[in-house]
Each structure stands twice: as C-alpha cells, then as structure tokens.
Length: 373
Image 1 (cartoon, rainbow, N blue to C red):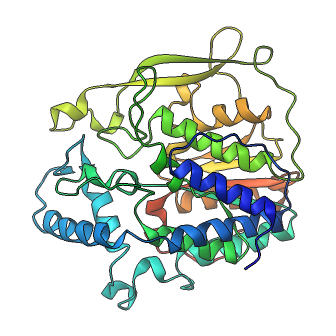
Image 2: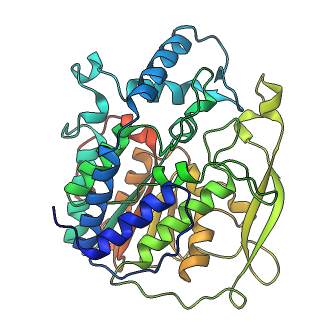
C-alpha cells in the first residue's frame, strides 16, 4: 500500500510518541479524505502489532477468577486504587464469545444494526448531508491503560495499550467514513508521570473518570485534529487577553464515593488543574450556542468544570473559539435524544460535531433510528 508522505509523518510521530520519544509536530492542513486515510493507516498498524496475546490470556483468566468470586464490594483486587467490577466485566465480555451475541465476540460484531458502530455510521451520513463533519472520541478504560493495576497482571514492556477490540471497532468506523481520535496509544505512552507538579496517572485511583492530566492530554489530541481540518481557522480569543491559563494544585473528591465502605475511596485526591479563567479568576465562559463546533459528551466532558479545567475549557484555550455544548451525566442515548430534539435547524451553522464517549457505550444495544426525522 502506498501511503502519502503526510501520512508517513503522522504515523512516525504516533509511534515515536508510543515509544516515549519527544517529538515536535507541526499542524498540517488536511482534507477529510486525507484524515480518514490517515486514521485507517494508523489504526491498521496498531491492529497488526504483536505481543498482546499473553496479556489477553492473563486478563481473561484473572477476570473470570475475580468475577466468579465477586462479593458485595465495589472493587476487584487491585494493586493501585480500586478497579471497578463494571470495568473488569466489560474488558472480559467485550473480547469473549457470548451467547447474547449469537456466540460472536462483541468487539468484532461490527455490522449488527442494533450495535453502536452501525448507528454511528448512519449518523455520520446524516451529518454529511447537512455539511457537518463528525468526530468520534472514545475514552479508554483504566484497565486498557493500566492492566497491571489488576492484581496478578504483570507490567508489560513497550506497552501500547490493551484491547485490540476497540482498535478494530475504530478501524471499522474509519473505513466507513467516520473520523476517529484513538486516544489509547497516546494514553498508554504517557500513563505515568514523575513530575511533582502534575498528576501521577491519567485516571483517578477509585473512579473511572480521568484526572485533570488525562483530560488535558485528550484536549491536546482533539485540538490538534480540529486544527488540522482544512476549514478551521484559529479563533479570536487569546491567552493573556480574553482568558488566562494557570496550573494549580488542588483536591478532588469523587461524589459517588462519599458513602463508600472503602475508606481510601472517600478521601479526596490531590490533583493538578490547568485552569482557564477570566480576569477575575473565575472559570472562563466557554459556551456559545452559535459556535460552529458542537461537543456532546457525558460526565467525562463535565468533570472539573467548576474549576475551569474541564474538556470544553481546555479546548477553548487551544482553539480560541467557544463551543456549543450538550453534556449529560450518563451520556448514551440521552445525548442523541437531546441533539435530536434540536432538529436540523438546531445544528445550522455547525461545521463539526464531536462525540466524546465512554468505551462502555459500545456494549449497549441501540435503536437504529435516524437522528433527524
């Protein structure tokens, strides 16, 4: 296969980053066709890599052991923080043949009309007819980035992320015209930080949400993708004039853990916020319903918003544009229903819709109905 030079540059950067090597990147303007080809090529290379078979065998064995012995406690045996059973169950079921999926492996059942990939392909066609681009950004699960946090799983050398099922799903989407941002290799290569002025990890110790550093890393990747679009121009708002960016140490207490029977889960975690604030030090105003970019997402897109350190604030600081927002805790079908209620007129003037989703969403059954009827 002949890969254009700009794609080779991007792939070289991807694998340099995956090896932990510092790289300097320059944003190159690309067409949608070029970006899709780039997505397909990089995902295919990731899918072809070897070395996950042993890890997968370990994960399946440990998952079965812990799930079969599951008691009335929120966390599986973990070496760092707490691994939630829901996450353990997903990693096991998503990659294993299941009677519920007619003995297919759910991660490989792409063309099932009641599964999410086909729904996203259909939504992409609707957006295309309206002249809107669509970008899917799944957030990796903690176990895909830190499988060694599950007790009994050894740490892997040259680790690039666990879970080829999701990589294959994203490849299917890209081959069918849906642009994707694959965060897993970038998260895996940046998973641990030794800095005393940053979060050590990308996920909270006793929760499935990312730390501020994880949110910031995702914002960097999404912003670079948007800035590479041939239609994009940097916004008018600039740091030091319209907003200010400050990094501060703080604490975060996971609301859902406040009544946990695990004492460590109730304690607030120390984190480092990259705050986007106004001249008075308040979280900057980042929402604009008239924006050409619409971000829809679940609680991952909202977390740290009261600190001005949520994903929308970070994207605003990088793009210079405010964003239109639909954010609903739990996400899933509720997000699409909220967007559908707007109707076609509600997306007039949009150039891009970004769907920030949990990897958990890919396990759900879907109603294959048009978004705009």
